[in-house]
Image (tube, rainbow over all chains, first blue to last red; front, side, top):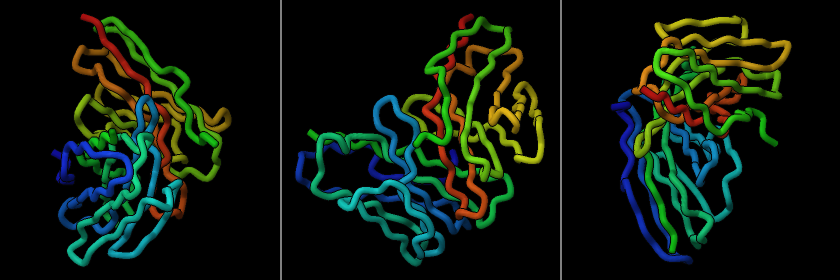
Length: 114
Length: 113
């Protein structure tokens, strides 16, 4: 158990809809990262928050947005969903300035868009 | 552009033998390299890391080698066990960019009894 909690674990929805994925980081971790893993692909970095502020942005679509709340949990909002958005979405957290670079991952949220 | 590449999608090894997983990178600004292991229906789990100023790091059966001139790293697992069967991801951290990791595509290791 990494200590990172993601909900829901599975989500099935239709094209054009909007969903929200939620992540609770490990206790004490200020940084939250979101990654997308599509079929047979590596993990693609989407966005990072540090203590409520956006810190880094990857190839995140404009239809996607995220935020980190004062209690440090984070939400990833996916709107106007397309078939190609079907993927595993992982959240990870880390301590500030982790010396070895290690991120701790949740079990992921599997999104299926029909 | 793919800054971290794992060119072998899969690898099959006999139990007790050595498993060698390879990774190439293009960005000289990476300061840490990491290996993650992932079982189906689970999140990636950290395995071992190496600083860009080192060339080897060992932890039990797992050793990571870094060849900076070739921009290549490898993970050696000796001896391999059936429980090591999983997808292994190579990842790299860009210096001073908040801690995000860039991942390779993964290599699926199968260790046969």
